[in-house]
Amino acid sequence: MRALFLSIETWTTRIAMWIACLMLAIASSLAVFQIFTRFVLEQPAEWSEVLIRFSLIWMVFLGIPMAFRQGAMISVDALYRAVPTHFKRVLDLVVALAALALMLIILWWGFDYAVRGSVQTMAGLEVLSMFWAYIALPVGALFSIIAIVANYLDPRRMELETAQ
Image (tube, rainbow, N blue to C red):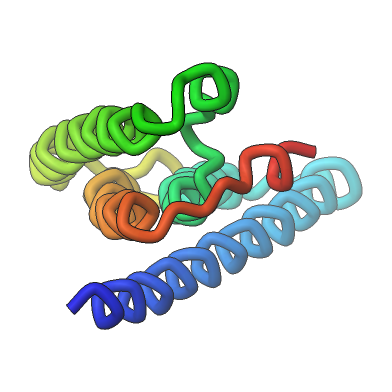
């Protein structure tokens, strides 16, 4: 069961990271496009700024699961090194429970916020509802919950490797 869960987590985190990378590419491409239209053509495209923000929100919330999985999101490295060996697993549990509590709050309130924002449209891009921007919170929280549990089951201490 544990191996199956970790296998599923590997795929979900990989998918989330690919989408996060795609969103970064979209945001940067749109930023270059916006600079070109604003300063070269002198005809700014208002919709591009909105889509940049939209893609950056998605990028952040879909990039968080990888940070959780690598053990780099909540760095308690100094405390982890200071506690005796037999308390390290307890510290892992406390950190995992705190992170899960935060993600459950983001999941609950993020979904509520997305539903409430569904009647609101994006300024400059009225064809899209704000629901599509806000739903990134619960989607990212779901991916993060899977990564947090996986990191508790199979810890990866990559705090120093990921902090550059």
